[in-house]
Image (cartoon, rainbow, N blue to C red; front, side, top):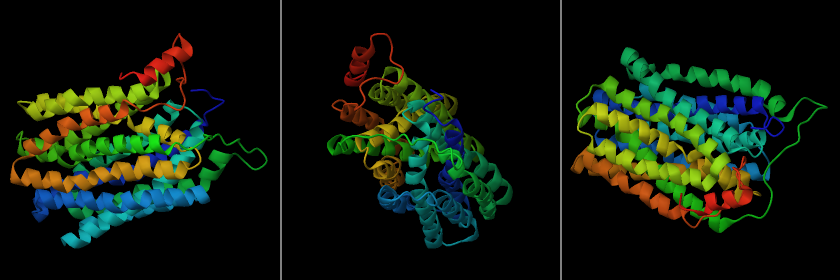
Length: 405
């Protein structure tokens, strides 16, 4: 990435904030096996908690983005993070299901406040680099994975009451953001950095089509994160630690996929990067469902993590380019509404799993990357050339963005 176009310190700070914020999203699926074990929740009940984590966020993120389009509100970045942390942190102290559901919903509202303004700040720091935005997205992937990685051993040692300790990282990062964010992004007084954001005409039809693609990918993502650990435990016969490890492997592999997606987008075109991810997801999900034992399933879990996460950062920057005059709204939809809508389908998958089996419920997910791939065929990239085109220049870029692969 070009030093003239990318504010590396700004990308690093926003990526670090994204790590901490999305840690609290990652804690929720990691909590589910413990809630099943200690509170005897059914599959449909734990799927309802996934719904709680997403429903308010789904509705609120575009609203927060719209407010940011009228006047940027950077204060929502640290405040949203703190709300997300407090909601999850109090779950272990409350015993009844309704209160637990409400606390996780409040945490989702904090996530909703964080993401549109964080994505705007990250785009300002990234300029026009897919790779820089993929680093920001990677922060969220790492945070989600750390949520599972930290929560599982913590709760094994402390029980559910240990969730309150998870508030500490948000307090530390929020303090750093309050002290440093303005200076890092905008420069010191008298030496302000130029703001580089996309410009042009809003293309709503293309943006809505992209939104449909993001929704399908979101259903696949939440289906896997909600039930992957439980699938390993109840269908493949592993213990809770190994089940939690499967979820962590999926999310850590997603970190690789996020960077790979940004790298491929800069070289071969953004739509090609998205399509390659969905092509790889088809055998990956099928492999998990059909695996005869947990080591084979774990191998396919790695491939699934890479594939499912490849399109994510590209969705964000492409959506902003489709709506250059409404970056906050575009970010609220691609990072928020369209993503979290997938969580609305988790209770349905949970009900199917209760009525049949987890294997049958996960089998449904195999068709989703096929649907997403078909939805991308008619999309056009508003910026024809990749950031670092291969020999052949614009012709190569156009072929990359208009071909199925």
